[in-house]
Length: 409
Image (cartoon, rainbow, N blue to C red; front, side, top):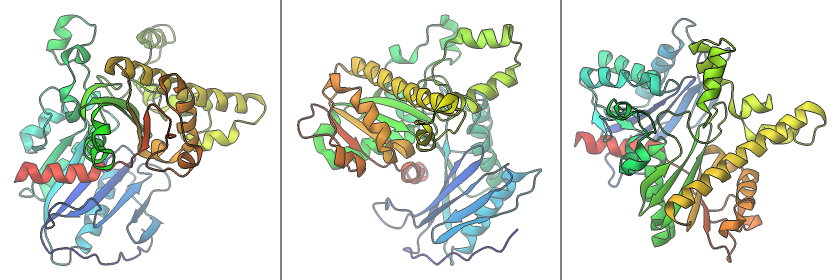
C-alpha cells in the first residue's frame, strides 16, 4: 500500500462516537458523529470512503485528506477495505470510544421496518433478503458480521431503507400476482427511505407547512426513485419489490415489461446470472448511451454526429421521460402537486436535468427560475409557479446515526 497521508485531528465533546457505514458493491462510505452533543449535529466530525473496490485502482479519501491510491487483497478486497476504514477511525479516536455502529441496510423485508440492534439471529434473517437487493444487502451484512466477530459487545444497528415506506397503503403494497405471493412477502416495499426520512425533517424546517401538503421528492442518484408524501409520510413510491423498479437509473433498467425478461431467457437463452448482470449493471443510462452512467458525462456528447450523439440524446430523453411520467403518476395518486423536491447526486447538482424535467411538467403549473436553478438554490421555482420546486441536499448518514442512538437508548 502506498504511503498514507495523516488525517488532521478533530474536536468532539469527549463522549461516545457513532460510526455510520454505507456499504455498496464497489464502495464503502463512512461518517463519524459525536453523540455527546444534543441535538446530534448534522455535520459529521469527519467522513470518507473507499471506492473502486474490486477494480484495478481503488482509492481512499476522508475529511482533510485528498484521495490516495490503496492496494487491496485481490482475493478479499472488501474485507481489506473495511479493515482500512477501521484502522483510520481508530487512529483518530484520541482516547474516545465508539459507542455504536449504524449500518444502512437496504432491505428489511416484511419483518423489519424500525431500526434494530443486530445479533446473530437478526443477521440470519437479513441474509434472507439478499436476493432482493444484491447490490447492497450482502455487503452491509458482511460488515456487520465482521464487526460482530471482532467487537461482539459493540452495539450495531441496522437502519432500513424500506422502513420509511411502512406508511404506504395496502393498495400500494400489493402486486397483481396470486394472493399467496402477498402472503409470502412478495410486495412493494420502496427504498431510499433514509433519504426520504431526512426530507421529512428538513423540508418543513426550510419551507414550513408548504412541505406538509402534496409533495413529491425525486431522489436522483446512481439509484433513483420518487416518493409521494402527504403530511411528510410516504403514500406511494416508484421502487417496489426490488431496487430495480421505477425510474431509469445509472446502470439499472427501472420498470421493465416482465415479458422482456422471459424473452431474454427463453428465446435468447440468457442465464439467470446473465439477466441479473444486464438488469443491474449494463442497462439504464450506461446501457442506452454506451458512454456513461452519469448524465453530466453523456450530455457532452449530445451534439455529436452519428450513433454516439444519437444514443446520448435518446438516453437523456428517455431518462427525463421516465421521471416526468412517474411524477405524473405520483401527482395523480396525490390528487395534485404542491411541492417538487430534487435531491441526491443528480438531483442536487445537475441543473440541466432539473430544467428538462420541469419544462415537461409545465402542465402542472411548474415554472423554473433559470438563475436559481443554475445556482442549485434551495428554491428554484419562479414566483408565479403553482408548484414550489426545491433542491434539498440529503443526509442519510445523520438519519442513520440518529436512529441508531434511539435504538440503543
